[in-house]
Length: 332
Figure 1 (cartoon, helix red, strand yellow):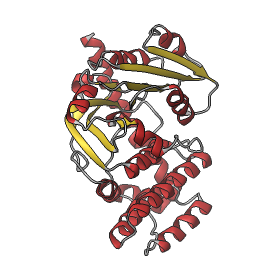
Figure 2 (cartoon, helix red, strand yellow):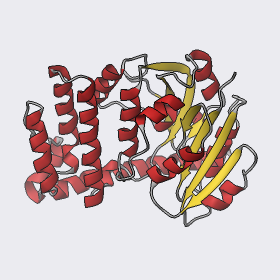
Figure 3 (cartoon, rainbow, N blue to C red):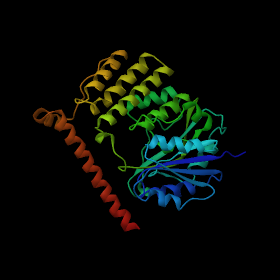
Figure 4 (cartoon, rainbow, N blue to C red):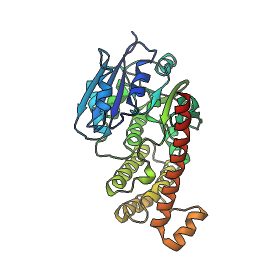
């Protein structure tokens, strides 16, 4: 029998995008699907727009604001699907995304084969999405997948995955302690629980850039604690699969790459990170900066150089979004 696919959409203040996202889910040419939207206490018109799509196959739930992980767990708690398609409230699926993965995959609700897809970045114009392959766009074992992510700083978006119910149950619920990188930690568990990752190049999803708070601006104590907890859990997950010189080296590279988000203000986290680096057989070094930010650091200190770097990156993104929005409005 053809498997039922549950498309699960957590939403918070996504009124600007939620309609387009839900339509991309409804337009999936795979016939056996259900769509579950959980509004996480939005203060805009997200819930009103979502309820316009309610039907026998589209359910809309609401809850007090508890975070994206809690909304995802609520959606999964009532999902009936043999397969789970996670979809953020501003991202999109190509109409044949799910059907391509089901056609190419070893489809069985008890399967531990994890299906991934191609994905492209866009701001407003989906047709201008940039599909840039990286080393994860191929069939891999869980250890090789995580090694590449850690060593090369490559990643996949949430929407690429089609997860069997068996894998979702083995991985467990989303971690509601995490406010940042909750998706990175969750899918690390899913990958670790899988038999292998099968990449389906014909399947496509679309990641909307610049619409959620970036890591570069996540400087609150709560965000930093969440990020470090996620990093440490991911490192432990890889080492549980293979604790060798190559995995410890990859974990050290991974840890060093993210230390700039804690340096120099988060003393307690830096102390924990230093201890973890020693456990991995290395030493945590001060983060490096490009020459222009190094000059700023020399005269104004680390905090100012980081702030300038963040603002510069933010301005660049804003300009790109405004430019793309202008052409989007002209074309519509």
